[in-house]
Image 1 (cartoon, rainbow, N blue to C red):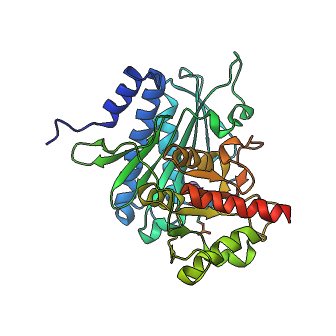
Image 2 (tube, protein in one colour; image 1 turned 180 degrees about the vertical axis):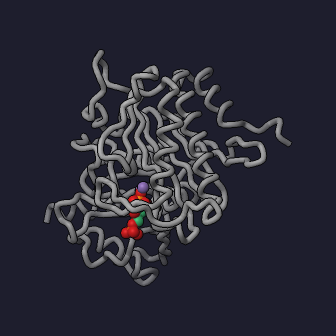
Length: 339
Ligand code: AHG
Ligand code: MN
Ligand code: MN
């Protein structure tokens, strides 16, 4: 039964050996990230029995109240990754500034960014959550690492992925050669390849957005959702279905599995904020995965992966998923800009 199974380790070795997609250092780094995700998965599964539920008495740099698991997952990722010698520094949604690998450890040439625990509002209600990560190379030059080094456009990512902690724990990864999914085999303690070359259908009848914000949206987003809601009788001529899990990981996982559109658009409540989701920890890695699976991702004006970041915790409007639908929403933005 297990002889033909391809483990994450073997997948990465083959990416390195046959396709020269990834250098050995990056392969080892991804193994460490996967190990940290296993650790987080165990903590998540223990729930109340492990004392990991509930709120911590702290706020992150973005003014959000932290959950205990936000902090635990952040610590697990830092501890797992700082001694391996593959990284120069890390940045996290839960840390004010970058975490440089301490001098007692060798420094590598990669930068790791993560949202340690995505979908925090789902933790205490036992609904799917996840970890999102993104890897860049340090820019050339023999000097110390600075925050500026992290401000690279998403097109420069060398690896990106997420791990979803749901009914199954599944690691989803791209190194620029399509998208592969690995399910955690708890008995064996390893991630096993369960889907290779993931493709998103170009059309869909499903959209994911927090509808309670509708009155705050911009016209093009309202127009798109209005037309979906009109169903068969409206201009789209078909009925749509809505899904919102309140965890980007879970919503993107559904889209990678069966298509759909996900939006967290800019809204009028805090007009100076570009959006809710973070460019470096959430939007960039998810956009690359979506594009690698044949989908599209933009912010209403431009492709997310082309955005030149200006700040570590920068936010962005996000529209991603099935290509034809995302293109349609972009077209509505363009028509609104011209009128
Ligand atoms: P995080 O838990 O890392 O702060 O991210 C939550 C994000 C995202 O995962 C999700 O799509 C969205 O916030 C949910 O927002 P609402 O609470 O507005 O539904
Ligand atoms: Mn998040
Ligand atoms: Mn988070």
